[in-house]
Length: 195
Image 1 (cartoon, rainbow, N blue to C red):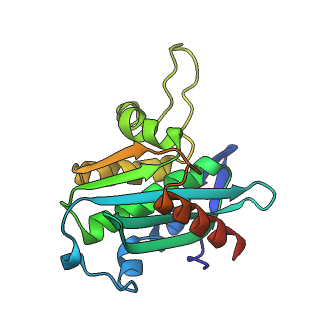
Image 2: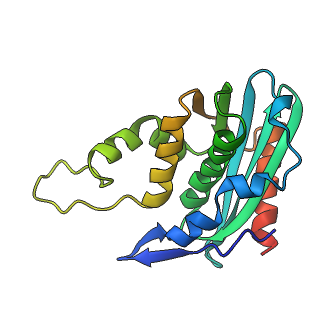
């Protein structure tokens, strides 16, 4: 499934997501296409996310699967161009949180990812990055402050997490037999290869 005209433009060697890319990936317009009723939600939701990346093609896929207990309520995936696997792991969580923000704001939600990078970024680093003007922390005050890779994605993710404080982002071991996580992985890889 091709999802818009997504592209990542390199700026001074660092991957950046264009504003056009973010505009093309706004979830509310995509959710209207989904057969999902927010009124069907009762109880805690678990959303499993995954990203997939192929360096040779500089493209990848992202996916998320929404679960309540053992029931799958919704799944979505897409493809984009990018520089690293981390881009697609962040993008998967961003898309899942966009879904939460548009469809089930205020619900008790746990977003699961197999990316330590995303978990640490959401729990710890985003507040530091925000405080430092979205620049990397450097203990040497004379050193040049470098931009955060995928800064625009992280800023949008930060905004969504601030607006949806009931959401927690947690780590789960990938490829360990968790059915929804395995399905998110499959969808992300299928999205990537369907390009």
